Amino acid sequence: MEQKPAELPVLIIGAEIQANIAYKVFEQDPTPKPRNARDWAIGCHWSSPILASLIGEEKWARIIETQTDPNVPTKEVDACPVINGKTGEIIRHVPLHSFYRVVRSRFRAFLAEDVDVAWGKKLVDVSYSSSDSSGEEDGGSSSSTVTAHFADGTSAAGRLLLGADSSNSRVRTLLLGPERARLHRLSIAATFINCSFPREQALYLRRTHPLVNLIVHPDGMMGMLAALDCADAARPETWRFAFYISWRTSPAEQDAEAAAGGRWGRRERLAQVKEKSRAFADPMRSAYAWMPDDLETVYYTPNGNWDPSMPDHKWDNHGGRITLVGDSAHPMTYHRGQGLNHAIDDAGHIVKLLARQWDKPLSAVVGAYEAEMRRGPARRCA
Image 1 (spheres, rainbow, N blue to C red):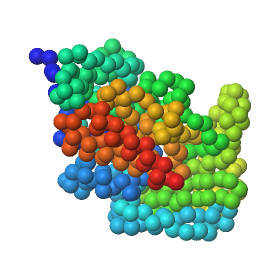
Image 2 (tube, rainbow, N blue to C red):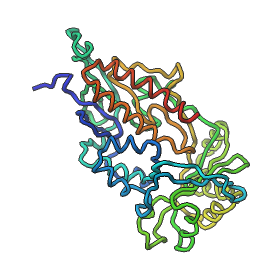
Image 3 (cartoon, rainbow, N blue to C red):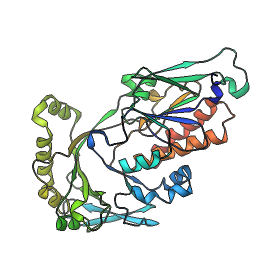
Image 4 (cartoon, rainbow, N blue to C red):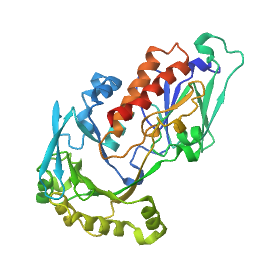
């Protein structure tokens, strides 16, 4: 028997949430393994209470399993050092409440436990349907549906589609068109490194803070040196670190480098950032000096953002049948470690509204969510 629209699930493109709401998750990656074998760490701090409420007390008790170093207990208030990149002196300590620095792949697998995820589902299009016979019940939207169409020829219908499919969101492009949905290019770029070191070097690099060090350089550069995967406390030589240096470079300069093609491969990017590292004091200078020149885990990253509060960035949610969350709605740079927190905040807000107001028109529910979502990043990142 065909389901009534009111019985259809929420379709989530690219992420997982858990609540007493029927939903279905679709992920374009073929498996839970990291894409292109690249992994990274992300910080969860002010959003920790929201995440705990979403996943439940029993599961939250296991959140330490996802941390870059599960052997480091999470403090009620941690103090993250901000280091002068030129001198190596600690400028200040930033207080972080309930700070968890999690490995993305581990965190993702943790959230996906007991969740029905359809892997290998690349979204290509979205369509909408409604019946003229819709009445006042459920705000006149009880016969309205949204359908996600995938590259493999399959489709899925739901009451609401949540686009959570990264900063280069396909859902955002479908809602706004490629020009309005395109990221705003910034005059910043970075090269990220994943690397392991011999025992004594690894211990040295974690001496200031076991999880993360933020580094600002007076010559217009920033950096981070952080644990990526340090699960084996007895074997520092197996620890993996993630770090970057970012610098000012205009979009025109970035385009010129891209046009040079093969002249800017991984080895050239590594040489470029090693040269920049010579302007830094330890620990950054030593980290770059110790890594091999033929390292493969080198990732050059141009920067961009997209502000959902701009008038030209307002989308039609089709009567509350489709909207954006997380990086799809407000992609931002990584420098302040805010992206995951805002994504969790979005998830908590939409789940709360859906759970408490499921009998109300979706247009009102989604409208309330979008109004708060558009205010949130600007308010917290000001």
